[in-house]
Amino acid sequence: MTSGEDEARRRDADDPGQRDLFLVPPAEGGRYPEVAYLAGNSLGLQPRAARADLGEELNAWARLAVEGHFEADRPWLSYPQLLTEPSARLVGARPAETVVMNSLTVNLHLLMVSFYRPTGRRTRIVIEDSAFPSDSYAVRSQARFHGLDPDATVVRLRPRPGEDLLRTEDVTGFLAAEGDTVALLLLGGLNYLTGQLMDIPVVTEAGRTAGAVVGWDLAHAAGNVPLRLHDWGVDFAAWCTYKYLNSGPGSPGGVFIHERHLGRTDLPRFDGWWGTDPDTRFEMAPVSRPLPRADAWQLSTPQLLAFTPVRTSLEIFDRVGMDTLRARSERLTGYLEGLLDEVTRDRPLTGVTPREPARRGAQLSVRTGAVGAGDLVKRLRHEHGVLADAREPDIVRFAPTPLYSTYHDCWRVAEALAAVVPPGPRDAGSSR
Ligand SMILES: Cc1ncc(COP(=O)(O)O)c(C=O)c1O
Image (cartoon, rainbow, N blue to C red; front, side, top):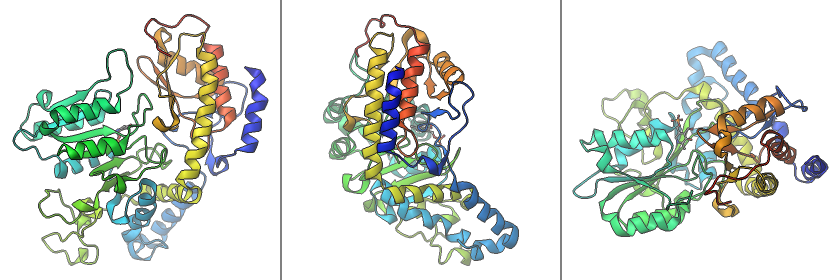
């Protein structure tokens, strides 16, 4: 593989990203000073500017204390509004349709309070069988909250026998046949395990035509692939900002609620004082007066210090633009795919992610069979300084993140995999 190193370096010179804006951790193992960081789908790297931006708010707190709510350079009371327009640009929404608040699972619950309304025959919640566990727990507990049996209420769509990926027709076919029993369709826009990007507009249309509410968990899609949530007619969506959005561990979540639902008085919603009209909030009235905006779903005082890196990060996305990022992402992921093809050809490793760029984002998942994902990832890290992540028992995920990953990082992945996994036959049943 060493022969490809010059080629990788050449590609980096021709097609650089924004790596200089980020802090890349030092490598513990291998022969390069920095890690090859392929885990941005789990936790994005720290933008260099985050420390100074946080420092400003810490200084304001020290200097102004409570007056910082009004007198900080960016007054804390209206700080969340600084995130509204950049978030809307990121997901293809109108500003009134987005808000940053809480965290992802909390937001899914708050949204389901409003949008999961089981009535009559229409009680079921449809998720994918490989939904992120938190989503599965959340929808099951929502069913229970409504006095329903989660086993009967939650439908888990599975790929066809022998296949790893849910086809669009598997979802639309189910909806055509049984859509009149579905109250809520809640899918991952980009599956956390396989890296598959769902056809969000087609599935949304099918769900709504069947009379269901359609929500999306965009944890792995926001900041990874271009989205047009408003135009696609999505009812609601939620995402986190700590993966591709690089806003720090446990950073606040983002929410989209389609304009047609804003200001509806027939929707139940859990209210708190941050959801009332900010112009009258401090009248301390007993009854909330929310504006027709996604802001109405806010409950509590925003966690200012957690919000600050979100602003830092969204500024980078605004400067670079999702379309530019996506174009580099396709080139980088395509390059990694070519290298992985060479390595996996004669090893017991199998690609799982769709091969068509339009059906995936910046992640390639590899099934490790008998090799064991956890051990493999440890060896990649400690012996080669390659940081990827394992989903037990047998999936390793590599995410070349277009803002900061390099072609050389991709080349290091392939070289390290070739060194760690000896050639050998694939497991029976592997398709690629
Ligand atoms: C697809 C998906 N959904 C939900 C979650 C849960 O997010 P949180 O812990 O922020 O609620 C994650 C976390 O990684 C995720 O990847």
